[in-house]
Length: 287
Image (cartoon, rainbow, N blue to C red; front, side, top):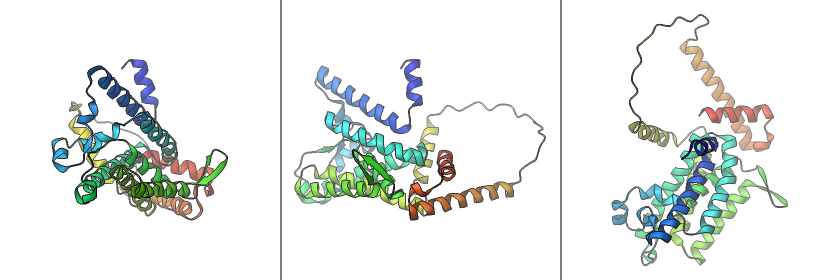
């Protein structure tokens, strides 16, 4: 990747980076199929049976980067772009990654269980691909977190919770009358994750903290050990903040966040003042 492309990629939001990666994987997989007759997807799709999954455990995440056709990748990325913009106006990339990939993982696990527990599904020769579980997790998260927030759809303003209910109902109807039952169940797994994450966060609990720590530990494995710089004694003038004053500032900040979140749950995101929106945005960036 050239320096210019690296710079442009670095400027993208986490949602836009995921979109770029998904599109690049889609194009690369298509080229491999056209030139060599072999698709990359077979090594990264999530198999329906547990034995196949044990042979490629990375597929529990990697399946989400592959798509079955242009329409599949187009609509997933379009939904990810718009729901990602709303999400990232509230929180930083760390929480976005939590919601997206936990949705991918839960959706994949439900797909595996559905094909190995429900006998009527076992005869279908299928594997799971697509970012739909992660995208649905992000969409339903924002719909549950700020349900009364209105967004413009063509000529009408629609509350987010209406949109969330619409997509969940579509999947439920498709399970009964359409195909791709395992895929639809994966969508619902992502929707469930997004809803629970949002409601727990409104109650002051971040259920993705453990996942964040896991990712941090994973990243540290690939980091080179930095050489320890020699210790230096530095004298600074000015007021020294005690531990108690730092704890007080943290507690005061958290109380303000809780008050704003409570206001959102009762009256919607638009009821916030500009100062409150700015404060919540900055707080999300610091998470």
